Image 1 (cartoon, rainbow, N blue to C red):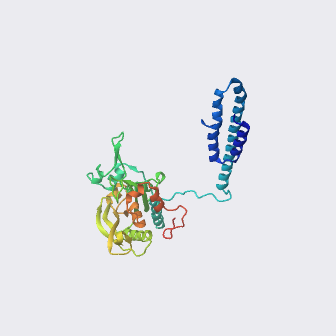
Image 2 (image 1 turned 45 degrees about the horizontal axis):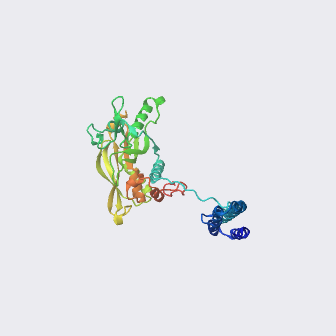
Image 3 (image 1 turned 90 degrees about the vertical axis):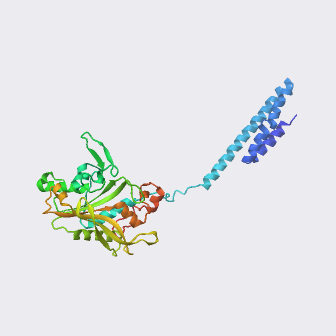
Length: 369
């Protein structure tokens, strides 16, 4: 017969000195299906009843002792491993917390703020209007003829007919803001107690989203514009040219700006012109203020007398100029973005590269971050 006392002493000594790997091997050797203690339990079947009554409790007791010793050693090893891990991964609570990821100002909003700041210094106020417009404010009030291409569905996003049978549109430009401001201004002249605007002179800019059915590297279905409007007595094209020249110099942060006006046609201005700025297009870049190339950058002109009559202002007394700038396009030119569509892709990597910190030092050109 096996000396159970000697086997107990041997196994408990080995268990007490075992590491995690050796402990698992000991458990298998002692208590596994073919383990030493398991074999002893199997041998009980070949014993006489008297021997089983004598050896059974002793072998079962040995099994319990060994199992308890293994469990205790495993708990001891687990506790030691946890202590070692806690010591290795200790956090110094006196250190400052790791920096949290901050958002950034989108380039469109940055450029919009820069433009507003520059025009505000010239005395322009900001006016706003709805993104969904009616036919009058988006087309008729701006002197668009009935068959103008902009009134067609291949150019403009039309909504479903309302209960009056009218199909409103997603505004194709921010020029409807000008009509609304001039209407309120005329109301102020005739009935000041009902006015929400100011009587002429008017000097406003109208920034906002606009919508057209275009999509390529330089066009997107939704984009941003900023319209400008000045209404006063004795306004000339010279005032318009000075305003735009001053804006371009300030926005692109250079005094070396050469511009030119080319005759053009817009329904809402007469005479109308597109404004080009001198630039350099070498090395795959566009640099404003140098070179001998030209880049069309905006359009404008004198407010058409028909528009003044439409909003109730006498064109013999009041004159004015209007202009429109593409905010997205100016952002692309100033900050060197290759594809306009990337601005609306919601790619975090792009935003991290081109975005502006909300806590940055002010821009010396504009005074804005």
